[in-house]
Structures are given as C-alpha cells and as structure tokens.
Amino acid sequence: MNTPLILTSAVALMTATSAFATETPSKADVLNTYANIAEAKYDDSLIAAKSLQRAVTELISEPNDATLNAARSAWIAARVPYQQTEVYRFGNAIVDDWEGKVNAWPLDEGLIDYVDTTYGGPSDENEFAALNVIANPSFELSGEPIDANDITPELLSGTLHEADGIEANVATGYHAIEFLLWGQDLNGHGEGAGSRPWTDYAQGDACTGGNCDRRAQYLEAVTELLVTDLEWMATQWQDGGAARTSLTENESAGISAILTGMGSLSYGEQAGERMRLGLMLNDPEEEHDCFSDNTHNSHYYDGLGIQNVYLGSYTRIDGTPVSGASLSDLVIASDPSLDAEMKLKLANTMQALGRIKSTAEAGFAYDQMLERGNEGGEVLIMGGVNGLVDQTKTIERIVTILDVDQIEFEGSESLDNPTAVFQ
Image (cartoon, rainbow, N blue to C red; front, side, top):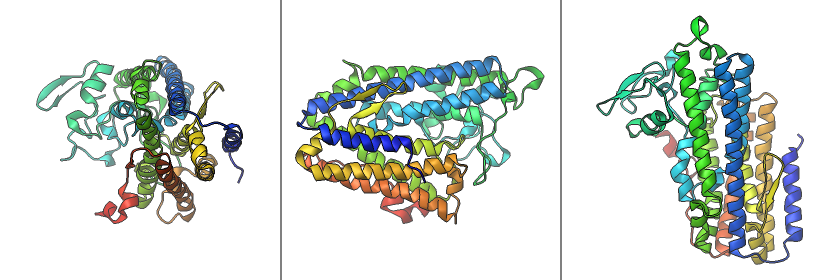
C-alpha cells in the first residue's frame, strides 16, 4: 500500500526540523509558534465554513442534486482544518468551554428533523429525542412554552442546544449541518452514507419530508451560527486575544497546555472514545462523522493536528506554511533520542491512520470496518488505536524530561477498564 503523500511530506519535515534545530528556543518562542498555528487553523476553519455557507445558500436558493452535492463537498472540506484544531482542546479552557457549540457528538438527530420509524421516541433519558423542531413551531421546555415559528441562530444556541441540560440534544455545529445535508445513515454496516434527497429542500409539491421551508431555515441558521462561532475563536488567538494571552502569561503552564492537548486527544479521546469504544461495541452509530461516512478523515486530521503541533509546523489551506520554534526543539535540547522516538511514533500513527483513510476512500467504509467479525477492519482500526496509545507513552516521558507540572491525560473506559463498557 502506498504511503499517503502528506505523510511522506511530514517525515521529510521531521528530518529537516532535526537538521536545523541548532539552538534551544525559549519557551516563549515555542508558545508563540503554537499560538500562531492555532490562529492559522481557526482562520482556515472560518474560511472553509464561509465556503460551506455559500454552498448552503446555493442549495437553498436552487435545490437540486448538484447544489446538494456541492454543499456536502464543502462540508467535508471544512472538516480538514477544523479537525486539526482539536489538539487545542483539553489544555486550553477557552477552547473546551466553546467546543461543544461546534463539534458536539453524538447527537439525537430526532431533535432536529424527521427520522426513521425504527429510531424510537422520547425516553426517560431524553424527552426531546424525537422533538423534530423543523415540524413543530412550538413546544414546551421545562414547563415553558417555546415559540419556534422562526428558526434563528438565537433559538438554536440559546434554547434548543443541550435542551433540558442533556448533552445529546445537539442543535448546533458541524454535525447538525451534516445531518441536514445527508440525513440518517440507515445502512448499518452496509455500504453507503446517508441519502437525504435534494427534494427535502424543494418548495411546493416537490417537497419531500415535509416542512422544506423550515428545514432550509434551520440549515441557514445553523451554518450562520457556525461561521459566527469560528469568527469568535479565531479572534481569541490573535495578538491580544484571550486564548493567546492566557497561554503565554505562564510559560510552564503553557507548555503543559500543549502536552495536555496532545496526550488527551491521543489517548482518551481519539484512541479510546472515538476508535476503541466503537470497535468494542461494533456500533456504526459510534462513528464520529456517522451521517456522511467521513470518519476516516476526521481520525486522520486529528492525528495530523497532534503531529503538526509537536513539530511546530502547519500548512494552511492556501499552501502557506506557518512554522517556528517547536516543542520538538525543546525536547532535542534535553534528549535528542527521545525526540527521535516521538517523531517516529507520530509517523507510525499517521501511517496507521493513513491506511484507514486510504482503505475507506477505496470503498471499505469505516462503519463496515466496525462490523463484528470483520478481522480486516479490526486490524486497521486497532493499528490506529495502538499507534495513538504508544505515542501517548512517549508524551508522558516528555512531560517528565521538560520538568513541567504533572499532567493527567483524559482517559477512556474502553482503554482503562474495558469490562465496564458492557456493564
């Protein structure tokens, strides 16, 4: 199997980084690079979201197969820079406090729109699991009547998102948009993603699914909200922004934040909750991008985000490089062999995630890999899991050698206590 080109480039970059790292950078310089890359990634995410917004406008204005497919393609492209920002979670409180608005998952899609009859209805755990706000312009929340005649960004973010304090009531962000573009994936472990027809946005007698005008209103509002939320976060990483200021005011805490993000995303979040757990449950609903069958890309670009933070180098969507003093440079100064180990493990992980990506693109989708008894799928997914877990062990050693505060990375029962998953 050919190594993806992007991996080959990354390995070359690692070699170049080692060759030119002749001085130990200051922690301030490393933090500045980290913040610059964050600013570039969130700005790229914003640019891609605005492209998605234009495609959504076209779909709503002139619904047909071409405009629906263009909107779907724009959504997939928008995930590429955003997934690379997830390494900024866990260590930066401002990102954690905000992230649920834009990337919360999984979601009870029945809150938003029509679902298959097998989906089920309200439950003790979630009264609003099948609310279908698109079909219901009024409802009660905590005993109070809610006027949803106009589906606005304010209604989605201020009232509907996490309604009744339930995290699965996801009304905003990438995955709400994904559901509105693809619909439910009812194929189980079979071939194919969601297949929402473009006629769900048609007007008049051509409308399918009912309430096409309100569905378009929801899609327009949720996409506008995504753009607004990304504009806010991009600003926080600019000079004088709250995220950059918080990161740089204490250098040791800032380095800890970098390592916390790398280790927690590698271990508990990606290896555990997003990959190992779904494989244990053999559940296609545990796909991160379950409506679009884009999970292979989400996993890949999460891994790439970890790698480019360590190396202090990111390539923007227009091809512009952003680089500078890196965590790798700090580690080289203390223990060159440990830096080489970290780079090798990052490369191994990216190779394993690259295999998942290329195999899915060749027609063997991630939800098919999750099927019980599919040995080939299990080998692919566990290759990624093992790579992520292994690189986390080296990140732990880096924490020690850089003499920063002890860090507790995010965990996952699927890795730490597997028997509890089935209890």
